[in-house]
Image 1 (cartoon, one colour):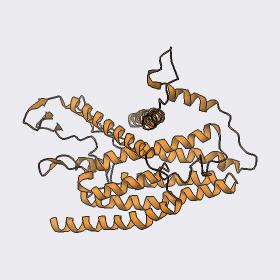
Image 2 (spheres, one colour):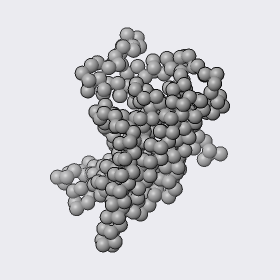
Image 3 (tube, one colour):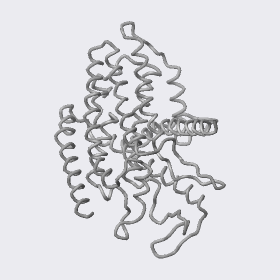
Image 4 (cartoon, rainbow, N blue to C red):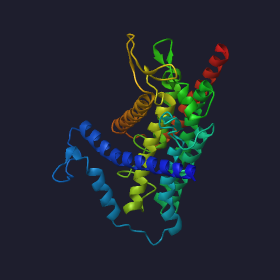
Length: 363
């Protein structure tokens, strides 16, 4: 019973964190795009006469979305039409159960892991869940019984499945390097320095794998420059017949997927919650400076700092992904498919082969 309550409490906390992050992701995108395009962005929603750079805008948008008219065309396959948005959102959001958000917290001699599931199955589990999300986009197009929406759904499925292959192949070199598919183990093996000055993060040990992973991950989120499945301003997408809250759920899914990509990038390539000099070990707990100075802190304080480091890395990656979204133009669909199959896939094979050969020579 205690285990059930603890798991339920973690689910509520993680889901609340994800929803809050998703809400403010919409605000961050508006403000960042406004800076790029030399305009103000969201700044009108006020509470008690205070706008504070429009930080209340996400709540105004959420309320508006809840009360917008939800029209269901009479010609759609209603059960599948209603199921599709929830299906895509669920499989994107549930991925967070496999993400380790920080080191185990030690309180009163008891250890509390900051995650719900762990083990060698976590990385395959994440890709299994992400791959299931494609059914929501495909069903959304096909159940609309609109040929343009159906084409958009099939276009979305083709793109996601293609880049999922490239993403998994890009990560196989990292898995071989760290000899594990457990995300907590992968983070633990990124601790310390390489050659005395370089962090043992995946981005430094697998630079090509990181680049391939990032491109494939952006393509799987279906956002610019890979937004051919949607492209609502010029291209007819799979959610053509959707309106109101169900349309908002598809839009929210894109932000959730971008957050998941930011989390995975932090865990796999940026050392997770590790930061050079921030140490929590049996012999020493605190901060070591490069010039030899040190600050001794309690283990709990260091663990809290590591959690904040993890959050900061995730936010920075997310901001970078927003920058990509507002910088590059959209590619043609044939260019997108060529990039996945003719460029990322061969480069992934080269990266994996080179990694295996180097590991064989070194070991």
